[in-house]
Length: 144
Image 1 (cartoon, one colour):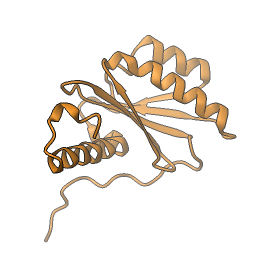
Image 2 (cartoon, rainbow, N blue to C red; image 1 turned 60 degrees about the vertical axis):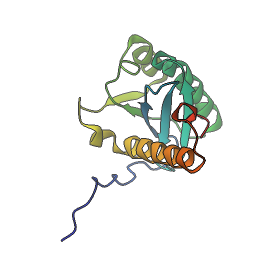
Image 3 (spheres, rainbow, N blue to C red; image 1 turned 90 degrees about the vertical axis):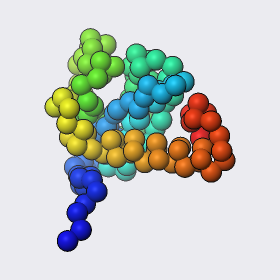
């Protein structure tokens, strides 16, 4: 019998694009952190490189407002972990004002936010592979 190396990513639970966005940060790395946002329906991803994690709110603000203007469907929810960059008064007021449900995963349970956690793993593996292939220093991983 062969054991699975990881918990499978849950099936799509939405009916249209931009209905649910999964969010998480990768880092801190030596130079930067990365905000990763994944659309639950399309699995399309947005990456935002940040010097500090508290910059996440500005990127989310811009992305959510842009998606709301471009989409004909209403965004329903944002799912994230309990990181301080997501659990603060700015996010709380923003979600309340736009009528978004902010879903938090339980502390220390990354599988509950599995869609974006899997994307994080894929991105880190891709960056490491590119850096190793070209014999580049790890501090250039944002450029990879």
